[in-house]
Amino acid sequence: MDFSRIPALRARTVPPASHIIDGERRAASDGNTLDVTSPIDGNLLTTIPRGTAEDAEAAILSARSAFDDGRWSLLPPAARKKAMLKWADLIEAEAEELAVLGVRDNGTEIGMAFKAEPLSAVGTIRHFAEAIDKIYGEIAPTAPDALGLIHKQPVGVVGAIVPWNFPLMIGSWKLGPALAAGCTVVLKPAETASLTLVRLAELALDAGIPPGVLNVVTGEGSVVGAAIAESHDVDVLVFTGSGATGRRLLEASARSNLKRVYLELGGKSPNIVFADAPNLDEAAKVSAAGIFRNSGQVCIAGSRLLVERDIHDAFVQKLVAHAEAMQVGDPLDPGTNAGAVNSERQLLQNLAFIDEARAAGRNIATGGTRILQETGGTYMAPTIVTGVAADDRIVRDEVFGPVLTVQAFDTEDQAVALANGSDYGLAAGVWTSNLSRAHRMIKRIQAGVVHVNTYGGADITVPLSGVKQSGNGHDKSLHAFDKYLDLKTAWIKI
Ligand code: NAD
Image (cartoon, rainbow, N blue to C red; front, side, top):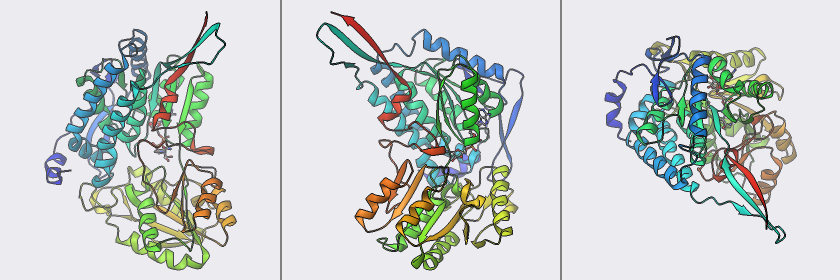
């Protein structure tokens, strides 16, 4: 990224955003808006439409007609590919604008946001666009007097509801495979991170993706999201967010048309450091980044550190040094390692966990406070809490902030028991130079992804999903198509 452009880009006035429904920019049906406050300084950035149930229904109707008349679903896959590749080019051409707009909206540090947001969306959209004209149906090995054909057909109208931590990255994990498959979409961004996704939908129109194929409705989850979840015209619901909302979506599906619901939910991911880790300095550095980048607002954040007792104190010291050396602050400063907490609400939730831990006599080894309040923004010091118990709320529940808990273990079995003693199962880390132990841990830990001698790191070619209460279904990789392509069979008598 050309960082010299940041001052000019951050000075831009952001016009009020609109829904994108049926190819048009629209206000909310009752004209109401929601203020968008920048977490950088607490100032009003712009407004978004405060969508109504009628807005959601209009978008669903548009997506339904666009699917049923085949303007997208019946195009040759190569034609969809062409439009989507053009779309990716347009996003890439605007990547710097999108990155800065997104940071002003959600507070992620620019160094991470530029790669993880627009550039990740570009890569994801290209990946699925390139794949779709290489996916074949099958002929079943039946007896010779019959022909069993297995077609792959788009499922129909997709409702996609996404969170605020990485709107473009997570949004494109849904949009890429859904649109490539030939589905049409109604997308509902989070209240505090809508602006870049609205722009993405405008660029889709510019790229020649027909009106109605990608609709975006902004507003509150309890209104717009709920209307999408309750709709009889939405065939599949794909969601990334909290478990509490995920439960509501399953209930809404049961109440309405039994639409399939795929959930990517939270995590409380264990990061397990054995004394035989190949390089404890590297382990400390990467583990600190694995919890504190984006102020801990990363679904796979390694938020529970489990350390072999022999090295507990020395390792915690190293981590504290990394935490205290992190530059927390203005997310548009390229030197910043951790930007703003997304909202005042989220920051207060984070601090409530710390207050509770303090009251229970836990040791706050570093951080635990709000910082930089004079900026008007929402910032929190990287925080490490030691001496915790397995049933403390700060150990059991996802904080979704820059908060690391530390527990000691003596044996591999104990490490596994602590790691798996969670309702969640999204990610994990294991640091060891013992190859056999690494493989044992990969098998025994209940998580969608187990990192070995690193934490984080990902690629669009590798699926992401959770087990237990971290969700179901897969985003990313060709496996993501399973959610958007139905198997349809034909049985032909010969
Ligand atoms: P959230 O559940 O509050 O909101 C997510 C989305 O759901 C938002 O768009 C919101 O408006 C909408 N929503 C809220 N209430 C709704 C309702 N009643 N009906 C329909 N929609 C509703 O979650 P959040 O705070 O925005 O996101 C943080 C959560 O997301 C964390 O738990 C985090 O771990 C999780 N997450 C998971 C992954 C993953 O891949 N597993 C990735 C990123 C974030």
